Amino acid sequence: MRIQFLGATRTVTGSMHLISVNGASFLLDCGLFQGRRKEAFERNRTFPFEPNSINAVVLSHAHIDHSGNLPSLVRQGFEGTIYATAATRDLCSIMLQDSAHVQQLDVEHVNKKHAKRGEPPVEPLYTVEDALKSIEFFKGERYRKSFDVVDGVQATYYDAGHILGSALTVLETSENGKKIRLGFTGDLGRQNLPILKDPEFMGDVDYLICESTYGGRFHKPMSEVEPILVDVLKRTVERKGKIIVPAFSVGRTQELVYELHQLFERKELPEIPIYVDSPLSVNATEVFRMHPECYDTETLNLVYHHEDPFGFQRLHYIQSVEESKRLNSPPANSGSCMIIAASGMCEGGRILHHLANSVEDSRNTILIVGYMAENTLGKRIVERQPIVKIFGEEYNLRAEVVVMNSFSAHADQAELVTYISQFNRKRLKHIFLVHGDLDQAEKLAAALSTHGFSSISIPNRGDEFELS
Image (cartoon, helix red, strand yellow):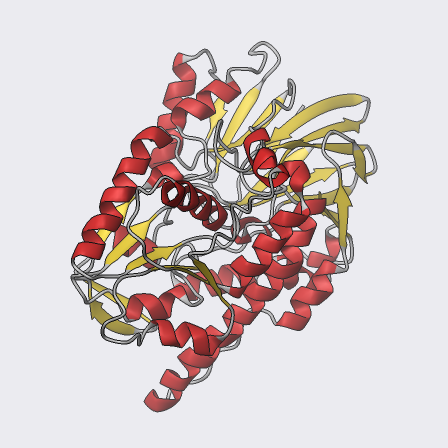
């Protein structure tokens, strides 16, 4: 069996790994690479293989950096099966359409500027029609029930506890009489977070592909995060500012809304309206309601007692463009509000318009609740660069920037080491660290070494390994 690492290598976007076995080829994930616009477009448009040579895709979860280039794969000739959990399939049915829609809108906006400058127009990576076609290739699978991927390969999903439907994947392969058990974490979730079940152990494996997003960092416990969140909101309200929150429409938005719900119920937050300005977030929340099998006990108890942690009365879900625009021109005496909008890394969608209207006002706060990849607008804001570009225009960053990574649904170093320490060290031959910037992967590798794991690689893009 051969594995080639083609995405999320020494970075956190574009997850994609090519497995070749018994004359067949399939992908673990097919994610969208996010970064510098020109580089991202070229990498996402050009696959390092013929799409029609791929027999299947085994998808870990619905986040766009793991699933978002499936429409391109289908557009260029893929005709195999896309395996995913039922919840992932349902989320992708809305997320891929939304991704295409956002790309088309952004391209229209950029092309208006290009026309004024006499520059040639650009085209979207794929269309809504391409996204809809890709959904036809999905096949939903259950946790803990094996399924055939290609000849001699069976896969089993286990709950990753990262977002709704997220899965840890175990591949059991048989080739030339040799059996190999390969584990893939996708994105590993955290213990004791609200809404979802905790990550479950996938069982011992011979090889492990593991994410390392926060491989060198440690999250604060939620008991310490809540007072910080309360303080951020209170001081922004005191100066009559807005709180702008870039957030992934699936996972982070629902978790933040859940936490705000608890704080409001305890009367710890000032009464301000909360706007979730993302049709995708609205639709994704409906998918959350459809899959209570993914909930933890606490959330199930809330649902059982007819409480709705995703729709408390202070929350306003925004659907139309007209409603979104009105948020940027409220009446002078309207006071403070919070606006939660996608995309999470500020690389597209309605968050760009809210940032353009907010970053130059020192009364406002940009609240960062997730990881920002290198060369994204979100990363430049985290770095507090004095001037940032939005839609090609320069803006002075005067708003307060607050980073709260403890809201992340990614395991930190301690949680990653704890999870990996469950594996039998005598059986586990090698660990491949992916989905993390190089410094984070290196720090996780060092931590794992102190816990008795000696054979660890941090692949470069294109690196190939023969597993035996």
